[in-house]
Image 1 (cartoon, helix red, strand yellow):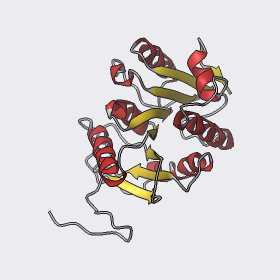
Image 2 (spheres, helix red, strand yellow; image 1 turned 90 degrees about the horizontal axis):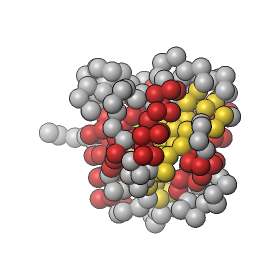
Image 3 (cartoon, one colour; image 1 turned 45 degrees about the vertical axis):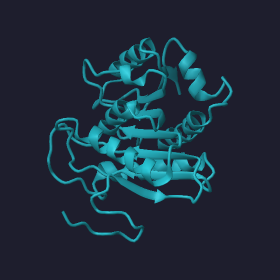
Length: 234
């Protein structure tokens, strides 16, 4: 198969789209956008689900030193979940990241279908933590792969596309499997993260800082969500 080289040297067949790659990175942040239940249509960067993650990645970047943190997104082959397609794409992207820059702690940030894929891809040794935003979590979604990992789920209280209750149940199963997991609910907000978008973005920045920093104090937002019996309300 022939491939086209982009200005950044990446192949068009690559699963990893690098937005920023410092010479001596210490960590990485990778986003995974939403999609559809079933669709073999080619995923494009101008689709709304992909565009929605741009300000999320900017918010995450604001909490880090850009001199030593890789910023990237997963490039899906298809728009749909199909047969775990975005999970395979995420794992390919993580393998590419490891080959490119070595083994660095990585935080995955996924929205909706991308949240489900990010949580599944937590089994990859490159992943330190997952931030799942309004994730799509059907009944029986596995959580055992999060053992030993960090995961925070953030859901809008008014989400009518994916279920906050399913997220709360998932977090409990992840904890039982040995994960440091927590949940945060954004009052008066929706699936698209448009209502109270500023709060969403500030929360992303705070959580990413905590997920990347192993020495973060227990009073940080991620740590507070792990310790809480019920979801934290913002």
